Image 1 (cartoon, rainbow, N blue to C red):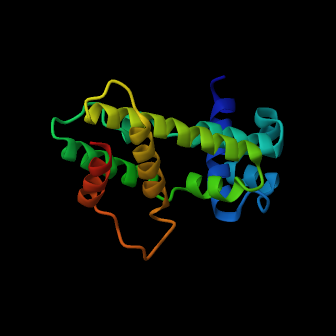
Image 2 (cartoon, one colour):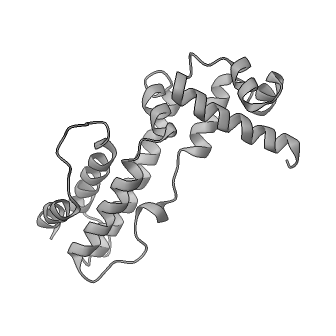
Length: 183
């Protein structure tokens, strides 16, 4: 669909992202969403069926970053430099507290579909990172050590902003730790 209806849908998603992150899903009415989006309230139901349908569409459509942004396309010859670059990308993208991060963290507890989507995204990122780590070590496919290292990297880079005051992990120290475990 094109024209005003699609721009209305986009405005609804943008308003939902902002308000759900700021106020929470339960504390945001569809009337408030419609006002913030500058659309009639009925348009929310036309596009998404229910308020929960809006939440799920928001999570589905706006919660993913391209894997190209997270994992370098080529592997530098130096394994240490490869892991430093990987950590820098992961911590920059996954460690950033975006409105979508706040929504997913807050709503996962109350919406199993949101929790399942978050798990899918996490698994997809972990698979991509483990594949990259396998290429770094010259392996054709990821083994258990690559998958374990990938899980640790994804978790640590995602959790860093959640644990303020914790000592920062430097890219150099992360590279040494990871390479010590997978080489």
